[in-house]
Image (cartoon, rainbow, N blue to C red; front, side, top):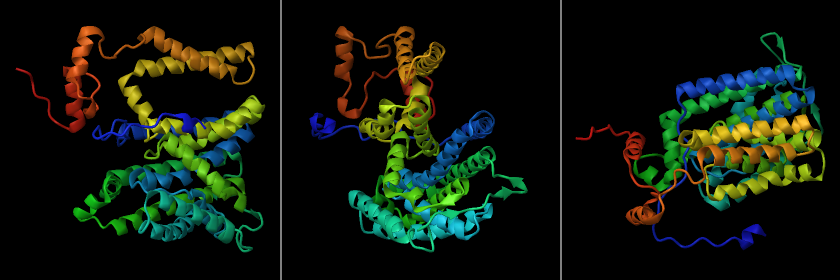
Length: 426
């Protein structure tokens, strides 16, 4: 109903081709830092988190690995796929029949990669919406016809606890670190692929298949490659999911649940290797709020409707929130620090005073934005007003997407973005 009453967008004859922040290739330093953060957080959660929370985090990391398969497919190549759990279910079934051990993830990856190539066949003939609808049909076939066979997951299957190099991973804390290592290895592999010629060709497919074909890229072959990569990664994620749960069931890979995690991934950033993890952890946060922190109708409604309402942000930031936050941290770090500080103080005060439900969170967000207004100034950094502002607005063409006058700092930033050398002024 909200969408029905929103104003319709005006028809534009010309304009900026891209006015939102795109994800950039991570540097070696950022890869190292965030890898250590992930491993440290998983280790810390193994010591301080409850067993229930550890199990939820294991599920989140497993789902995150499944979603990592969509990063090259949807984020780089721009091919929609709404059936990640179908690929994960195939990987889970192969993992079960391979004995459920850690090495069983290898045949799961290879077998699901071959299954992913079958998914690529509709992509050779269909585009956009019709391809997305066909992927839903494939998800229904996988869950309603393949995984429910008596030889597969028609009944709940038990898996034995696993060990790696003699280390027992039967406890949730130990398996949490194992799942974090799997996620990290897959994410690092994707970063390497993105920097390679294969990654550049996939991005070329997203920009224009016609242009990619004109420069000699075999479009059909690249689509088969990316579906194989997506299938192999999602198969590993499905295997980790049933290894952590110690059971395998068709209910773990329902089509509706798959649509929800794809939605969460799109909200946070389908072109980043951190988006899948944040999307999966968002489900953990909502579940913990609704069941442990503040059980009730309000938080249950937030758990159900939160991701659906968050999708409205994609109208302004179609590449997701993570590229937006990274761009915001670079341009306005004080805003981000103030919001985080306000949220921390607000939640801390709410916990000490004993405020009920989600009131501490609301208070924290309010204090964060209040800090932004007080410390950075309302409207700071906007175009000047009055006669000078009118002159600036007249000089700027709205069709170019430029919303501020060029100054030396802006010119230097533009030169760095384009890879051009600085020229000293005379």
